Length: 114
Length: 120
Image (cartoon, rainbow over all chains, first blue to last red):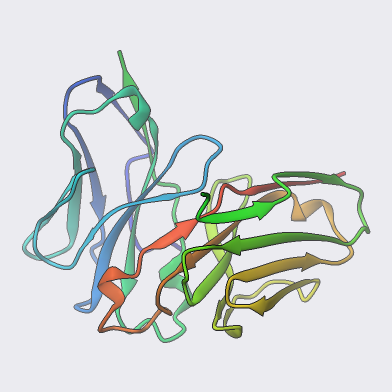
């Protein structure tokens, strides 16, 4: 089973910020939080990742709580092309064959509306 | 240029047949993967190779056999296809192998566009 929980769906108005939450209450100290998205009929696409500090890149920002038990992906100005399923996963730095770290859950289906 | 390319994109075949899906990456990565996305949309890893060496072998039927002729290619062969094999299969690659903790923070996985397999 996936080690994260996300709401199944969210709506966002075009041009507004989309805030996608993820709970990972069992995260361990050496596990990173990764976000991917999957646009319909395409392969998953990497967005951003972090360990404990907030991160920002050209696509999004990642806010990780101090206890690291949850995080929020922020798309600052959502466009129609951001409509996709967003996956939050945790991946251990010492993966060492722990297969469960590479399971994507059902993610959050984000619908950006005009 | 497509970074991770897989063929065919769509495949419809009858039960009992043997089929292959090919995958190639031009990113110079050392690690490649096969993932399966089922009808419930869960995306699960099946296999992973690092420099032609099998490093992850998830619990999948032995009818599924990956083959890596070189580190840029990872093909998936499926024998005696069953109805339950119908799914989308994604090939992927990453620079490093999972577990390389020093460099893991940059170990992004790049996915192909998927191969839609329908067994009838």
